[in-house]
Image 1 (cartoon, rainbow, N blue to C red):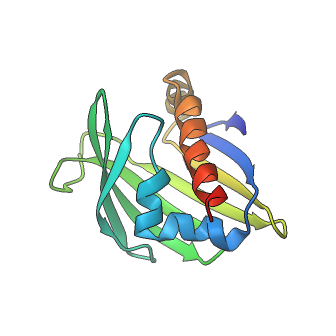
Image 2: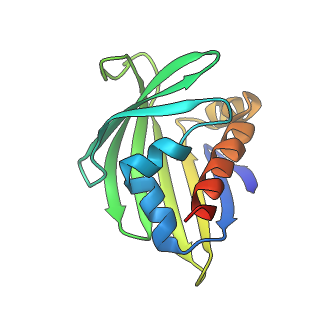
Length: 156
């Protein structure tokens, strides 16, 4: 997996040994999403999942260190090509934490025949915020999460 900071953006790129349809479905099917969208040692419980423009997802990531709640608000969804959303920290009832900054995420999928190149771009408010997120270890968390995705895709 490649990761780089581009000003206020963090860009992850990884190629999966699966067709683009399978990778897209892992992001848009609730049952599959629960199986992989978390780092090692954690689990995901999805409470709401409506992946479409204007749709919303609400889920918990449960880890030994504690439980975090996330709300995703989808801007643009183009099957097998792009998923564009904002994610926000939330409370256990799905109320967005107004004291925490949301993050704009753009997932782009490139069809490489029987493989898929995934580029995930996280857009933060400032270059300093992006640097801080990298220093906090977001790369290891993303690597672990994408390892789960790779394992799910291998089972198909």
